[in-house]
Structure formats: structure tokens, C-alpha cells
Image 1 (cartoon, rainbow, N blue to C red):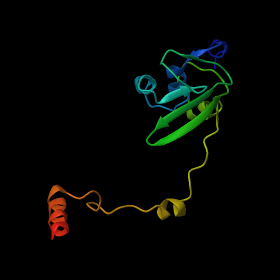
Image 2: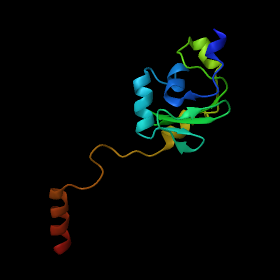
Image 3: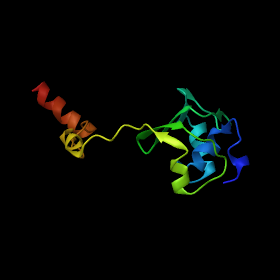
Image 4: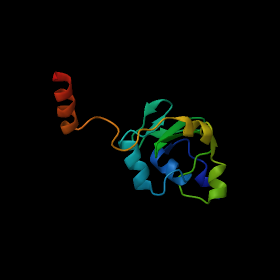
Length: 127
């Protein structure tokens, strides 16, 4: 890697999260920033917000949140082996499958009664 790639003092957040392979495309990274799914140091980040070494970046994708700390600044996409060296992953481990299986789930259709079922219940209560 050339020395000019690491001489930056800051890099755009959308470019950095794309370069370290947290998003597949830069446009997807920018869209996530615009929709509020990317936070830098606790504040919602716009795509052009600069990140510096040591910043805390939180990304919500697919119902999970990734928490990474910026270890090295890069602006160009690199291989997966190099990308892993550019951030420190502070994401907590997912809960065990046994815990997820213990969460009760309703059967489909077992939620709120339909209008027809409500009318039938009303008829029963009136009698």
C-alpha cells in the first residue's frame, strides 16, 4: 500500500465503511448514512462526515448493530485481510441460540382478532 493512502488525517465516513468492507457498495454506505443507520461517536453521520483514528462507528444493518473503532484510515477499497487491520470490532457477541429459542412467538393469525371475530365476541357478551 502506498504511503499516500495512509497520510490522511480524516476520511469521509461513507468511503471508510465501504473501504473496510462493512458495505458492499459506496452508494449503499451513503444511503445508510442518509437514513440514519450510521453513527459516529454517538451522533448520526451524514455521508461526508469525516472520521479520524479512534472514532467509534456504529452501523445498523439487518436488525443487528456493528460497533467498530477506527484503527487506520483508508479511502480506497482493499482486500479483506487488510480491511480487518483497519478497524477494531467491538460488537458484542450474539445471544446464544437457546436464549433466542426461549423467546415466545405467536402463531400466524393468533394475534389481534379480526372484525368478524370481534363481532362474534360482542354477540357472546351481550347474551
